[in-house]
Length: 119
Image (cartoon, rainbow, N blue to C red):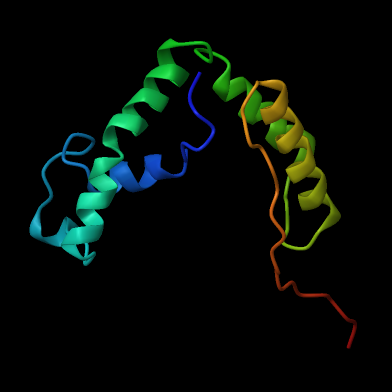
């Protein structure tokens, strides 16, 4: 099992800048990140590859899409500050715990949200 400290979100960053994950960039495809940050993001490639293999070839093969579809069907839109968002977060934390991940926890954040008023 993957360590819980592994950040799945790094997959997107790695895919964005890793030469192993995407074709060579052209001049218009290049980003303006500092080289040090690009090196750090590329350093996550082995972990990202391990996560991808785990999801596509390991225990979660064939399950990931179904779990995501079930989640979206159950919770629909999750607007900032809404009770539906809170319910979705609680659901996901419980699901991750059931899967045996370590150090699963939520963090308090301030999310500004708009409240509609009739004029």
